[in-house]
Length: 536
Figure 1 (tube, rainbow, N blue to C red):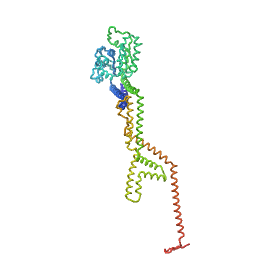
Figure 2: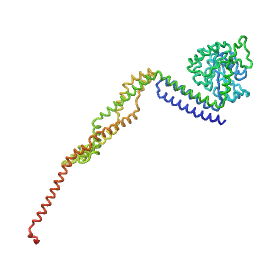
Figure 3: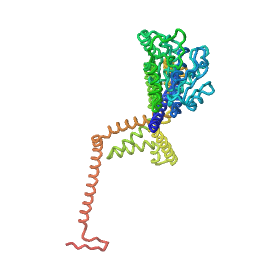
Figure 4: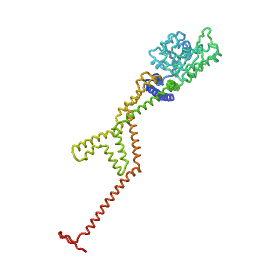
């Protein structure tokens, strides 16, 4: 029992992982809201997701094995043979099974889940505690799919298949390749992996053995693979009537030979499929198959359109880049205010690199650019009104320059840039939309030009502008701030300043020497002051 619980825990984890995968595929399909095949993919994902959810609910329930097939194939006869009760499911071409589902189980409680999900559809439950072979499985007989009264019961058939773990397709050996039968069965067959799909060729005793083995079976195997586009791993040739308690052979219909694979079918159903661990394995296999089925559907829908879609995708990306370049061109032509800000940023950056007297001049010039010529008016003597006006002009100029610097650093509000971007995209979009419609998109795509989110685009442009501006300013200021260049321009100024200092010091020293010498030549006495000097 502990082993079964481990199986079920692992099954829950894998079913949850499969559901997450389907959600991702559905989200991707939903992202292309105008792509018509994508809507079909979303529907497939929802269907598969519902099936997986039902599997998770049934982990504690028995394995459901459902028989499906055309009228006269012998589904009910096979069910009676498997159950050991000849009257479990009525037989005959006009029997009531065209109107109901027959469930055979060991205890009626085993069918509770089926009864709940199929309500209020007609379901007959046949149970017997002596059916020891049904310890872990439930057998289900379905309405005929091609009788005169079958069409109204197709929804019931679909709901039953949705609750099924193993599907048994029963075909009539006397006419196994009926096209309408195989076409009808294909959507159901697609939902089951190889291990959960059994094909039973019934009434093989009505054909000569040589013809059955040499012609009918090989031809049917190839035909099924072609019609269903999948390999059938389990194909059994049986005579279900032979295994009833009372076969009641009609006159002239006794078996033509003894070739019969019913024991192998019975061993598979009541042997390997009837193990407790098989409950989780069968559902996990089907879950993986459903996810793989959706993946294959995605690949199939994209296969024919992929080259065209990739080409249009490339064109759209190029168009988006063209729109960005157009926006950047508007950004580069930002006008005189932008240019003033860039110049101020350039000299501020240059100020941090230059040293010496030229560095002082650069710093002075950088600050002058911020304040403007109005500052000079405050330094002039004369009319106080003119001085006051110069001060005001300086303050106004400082605010404008500061605004220009901030705009240059950030790229500004970019309203014009975004307008140019939108215009560039919309002008070229009708051509792209026409190509998308040819690849399966609806006509609503004409009004759905692929425009980037304006806020995100503005941030992108601002970031690109700031990066480009920083790189360009760094490159240019580095080129104009080499040691050799600074030394070359600073050397004459330093030499002149050195010479000026030398001359100043020299003049000062000469003056001091003259004063000392003059002092030494003073007379011995100074009349009128009463001071007498005694010469040595």
